[in-house]
Image 1 (cartoon, rainbow, N blue to C red):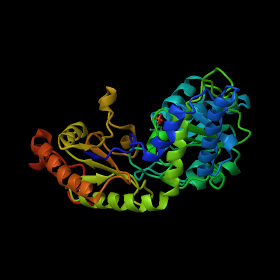
Image 2 (image 1 turned 60 degrees about the horizontal axis):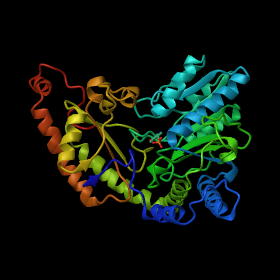
Image 3 (image 1 turned 90 degrees about the horizontal axis):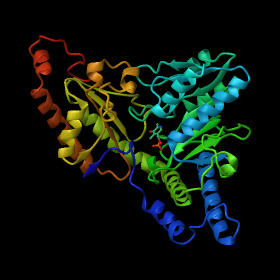
Amino acid sequence: MVYADNAATTKMSRTAVAAMLPCMEETWGNASSLYGFGQKAKEALEAARAKVAACLGASPGGIYFTSGGSEADNQAIISAAHLGAKKGKKHIISTAFEHHAVLHTLKKLEQEGFEVELLDVHENGRVSAGEVSAAIRGDTALVTIMYANNEIGSVQPIAEIGAVCRERKVLFHTDAVQAAGHLPIDVQKQNIDMLSLSGHKFHGPKGVGVLYARTGIPLENLIEGGAQERGKRGGTENVPAIVGMAAALEEACAHMDENMAKVQALRDKLIGGLRRIPHSVLNGDEKHRLPGNVSFCFEGIEGESLLLLLDDKGICASSGSACTSGSLDPSHVLLAIGRPHEVAHGSLRLSLSEENTEAEVEEILRAVPEVVEYLRGISPLWKDKVIGKREFLLPESYR
Ligand SMILES: *Cc1c(COP(=O)(O)O)cnc(C)c1O
């Protein structure tokens, strides 16, 4: 099997598994219990907090463990919005291509009377700090812009946006789920007030994540309960998962440069090969791009068919279209960067990790052109284009 869907989830690292086992077999007590056995679990929990904090340039007091990236996004945005509303600020700035954990939370806030302004991300999938600055008003409660996009891989100028928000005294949250463990993050230097990350996107376990919140930002509870996480997130702490996530993040950060170099070389080989397919286009910025992200649209095919045929060849990939979620709408991300519906339907995302090999990339480069050609061959729409009855939407050879 060739696994090229690391933006969806990653395989747990040996380091993460090894860190988790003693938490399940030996120090499995309740971290809130007062006896020594429980306190051992508490020690492991706090050591994990310190590790995560160190990887983000944060203080341990700013780290809150959650059930994942989605919960962290929800809690950050709802907290900042309601904090703003107390001061009469009900304007929120974001972008049109955020993850649904952000977009759906913003939709809910709109129903509560907040005004949500989604900035244009342009064809390259980026927004400038100047555009953020121009959108900030006296009543802006929050700017929430993702660090790197999960579908097309474009990386935002986070430090510049952070500087603008700090200068204008507006809270800045970033969904850094795709960036954490893959790109350098420093919440102090980048002026990030709140940040979300998720364990399973950097070879840690699923169902665990982090919300970072700068000291002094009062969080609103999504889960009421005990006094865990300094009273901000009820529920007995999932110590094994938290410890596994911290170990995975520490490992990813320690090897970041070498992993980036390796994965980027594989990515660029894939991009170079796939852009030879006629009537194709690369999605996302070429330079400001996640090390492992390859995203293309191929005119005249359906992404779902492409995925199924690649699966037959043992290749795990993803498409932007949200067919799996029961809707036939093309990806909101691809529409946000201006791809026409028809083109957006023919998307393919390959996301690599340092576990992938050059031989696997070559296998993908043999399979994809073959499958695209086959699917075009059986498409009546494509035939119409070839005989000139319909217009091609993408140029034959790559720009
Ligand atoms: C995966 C992902 C999430 C959701 O994280 P979970 O831990 O799966 O809830 C949020 N944002 C982005 C950008 C993601 O890629």
